Image 1: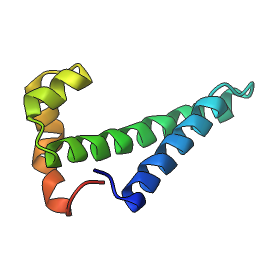
Image 2: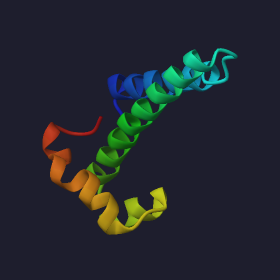
Image 3: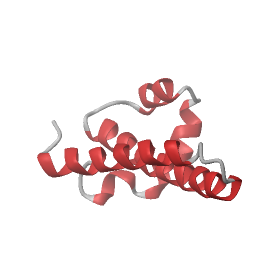
Length: 91
């Protein structure tokens, strides 16, 4: 279960993603490209938070990988060696 502070953090990330998606549709290609680059970084942060939450709640690497549509080795390589679970609980 998410605590209120963790729910707020994930909610903030989703709100930021929504704003970035809208900004990526800007008529100015420079602004749209900046928004797209930041959207990519924000999406990576959100995915890391969600993977950490899933692992802390007992999901296997195989199940996490299936939900992300990638191979187990891919998700484990990306998140397994980063100390993902040693960061003190879920994001």
